[in-house]
Length: 142
Ligand SMILES: CC(C)(COP(=O)(O)OP(=O)(O)OC[C@H]1O[C@@H](n2cnc3c(N)ncnc32)[C@H](O)[C@@H]1OP(=O)(O)O)[C@@H](O)C(=O)NCCC(=O)NCCS
Image 1 (tube, helix red, strand yellow):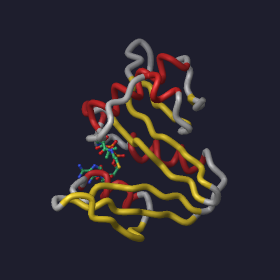
Image 2 (cartoon, protein in one colour):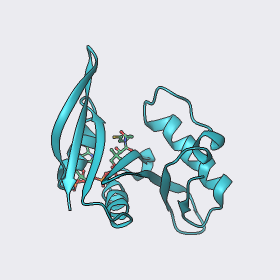
Image 3 (cartoon, rainbow, N blue to C red):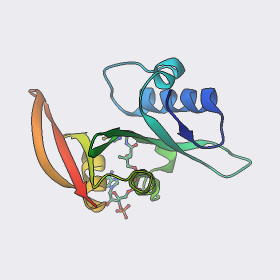
């Protein structure tokens, strides 16, 4: 069962994550609250201040031995370019103890590649997924 570091309650949080991912992240699977709750990923969510309380964005944190993999980074369109993506990456890094932080980004995702570069990540490898794009592994050593 994943943990959510927010005050929304597990089901509300899982629903919020699934809606964000389905709308923004071009994933090959459609997520539901159940699929999020049954995953081994811990999510950090950012909420707007009351009375809005909108979900601004989320990031998944998955510790795999000596490496932390950041997954499902997502910021709702109306909140982009205001520093929230960077804020989520920083929160994710601060939430884990591993010395290596990794993420996988599509080569056609300029916003995400620029964001991870700005956060101090470097490309360390890639895999061709379709003729149109590669998955690029980016890493930061703490
Ligand atoms: C990628 C994403 C999370 C960025 O979130 P964000 O909150 O807009 O990012 P930030 O405001 O923190 O951006 C910080 C820096 O990243 C870079 N950056 C972010 N978006 C960018 C864009 N569209 N083009 C170029 N650089 C960008 C810039 O250097 C930016 O600093 P600046 O605004 O001072 O120039 C957001 O666009 C998103 O949710 N996209 C859809 C889902 C997705 O692709 N997730 C990533 C999966 S790997």
